[in-house]
Each structure stands twice: as C-alpha cells, then as structure tokens.
Image (tube, rainbow, N blue to C red):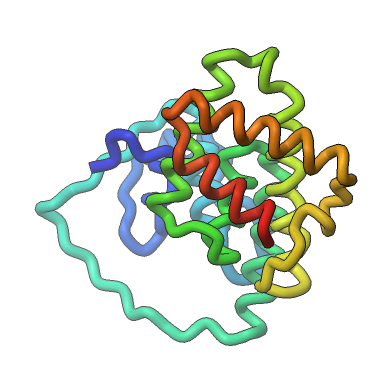
Length: 195
C-alpha cells in the first residue's frame, strides 16, 4: 500500500516492475548517463511519477531477487549516481534521500519528515521561506559529506552556518514545535543542530 508514502517511485525497481511500453518511451527510457551502480531505476521511476504514473503494489505476484554484497567501490559508485540523480532533479523529494543514507533517519521517518515539511510550507509559504532555504542547504551539505564520509559531524559547520544562521534556525525550530504537527521534522532538525 503506497497511500501516504511520499516516495512511490521507489517501488520502480527494474527487477520487479511491469509498465506499458508507451509510458516508458514517453518517459525517455533509462538514462544512459547512469553508467555506474545505482539509482538508474529510481530516476526513471521518478520521471514516470512526475508524469502522473500510478504505482501499484500487487500482492498476487511474486518475484525473487538475489541480494548481493555492496562493497566499498559500489558504495562510491552509488553515491556518485545519487549526485547525478540530484543534479538531474534538484528537488526536495530527491535531496531528502541523504537522510536515510547517512543514518539520520530510517525510510519511514524520512517519509514523515518530507510529509511534514511539505505541509509546513503549504501552511504559510512566505513565513517559512528562509527556513526552506536553510533546510535545502542542510540536505545539500549532507549529500556532499556523503561523498567524503558517511559520518555526519557538525553538519551546520560544513554547511557554513554562522552563529546568526544557527540562532535563526533554532528560532524556526522552536516556532515549528509550537505548531505541534511537525514532531518528526523538528526532531530531525535538532539531531542536525547537535551533530
């Protein structure tokens, strides 16, 4: 059941997907810029999602996939392809993937954070414009750090946040906490503040 899941395009894994030929041609097929390991299927799934494709989980079909170990060279390739994915789709829905990859959030928490973030911006886009810019910058920094090391120490320092930026972010976090509907988002931001 993908209802309420912010990333239905993640279900587009080439080992277990079925799609009409016309749709995949209209989407532009697999992007041949992805020559290394990872993300080529999600990127195509994301393009299909943006075109309005519906993703349906079928309980009555079974597929089997032999998992294989992902060594350090594949990790580097996957992070490079994630960077390519982000370059092609520099959007919150893709940038936020870094939260799970670096271990700051699991997939379900990441899903809740994205849902809360979108709800927050819908509630008052002008009020949270600067917060939006800071949050995007934090996510961009996490992706850059991933290319060097999986540990995320002093994310705000790596993002170049001054003491004024940190104070403004803390004020935003406190303000959002007062709204009481954004617990996952504020919890994550506090983890980033304390990294």
